[in-house]
Length: 102
Image (cartoon, rainbow, N blue to C red; front, side, top):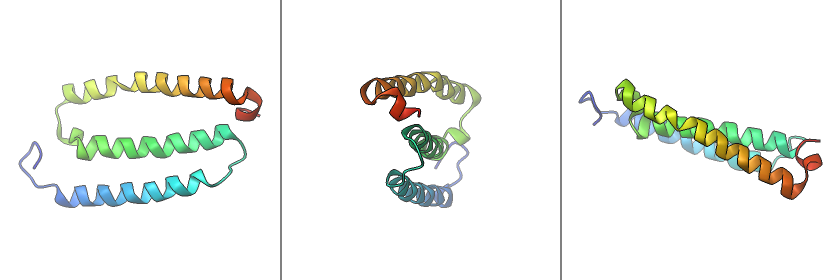
């Protein structure tokens, strides 16, 4: 049970189903060439962002938390963007810019 004393079993089950479907989509997208490595990375990050949002909202109960707790969770987003930028930068150095961004 979460903050308001109400059972969220149905919401958790739907969230789990959505995560499983998104995992299947992730595996499928990993085997498809969308034209360039950059597009493939963007699609993978978008799917991962949706999955992370679902986990944070429902499994971490942020949907039912007060605004201060949600604010601290949102505060982590710039650091995540920084980490993703570092990964893309590292990929362009290792693989070559022309293969990542044709």
